Length: 131
Image 1 (cartoon, one colour):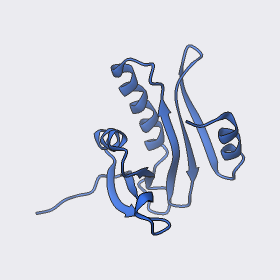
Image 2 (cartoon, rainbow, N blue to C red):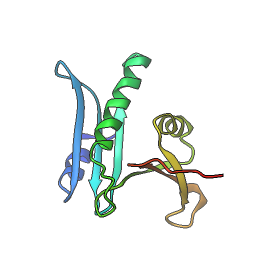
Image 3 (cartoon, rainbow, N blue to C red):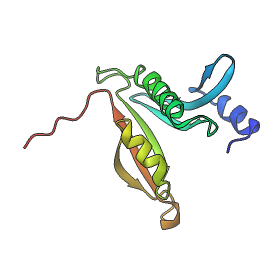
Image 4 (tube, rainbow, N blue to C red):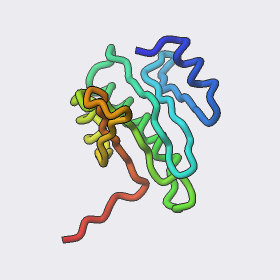
């Protein structure tokens, strides 16, 4: 989990935005992301584990819908969301998949297999598959 210091140091970076999902003043979840030239890089997102499963799903949906609303179909604008996920985090991988994200690459930033990440992507326009 992130500390208040983690949030503050991230929010002080250029082009980093944080948004909170709330109801009646109660924080249900959040997302922190970085605006890049052609993409939005999701740094961190979470929803309160205290929520009932149905409400948790709705909160994730609201966060992802808000992120998708920032995408454009114009190729000169931001056309996709990117999120790097530790390959051992099966639960989050399934959650992303349920919400339309797809894994498209495997990253090993330092060449060490212990630090392997799935790179997930959500496009403004779904890919067309032809047979």
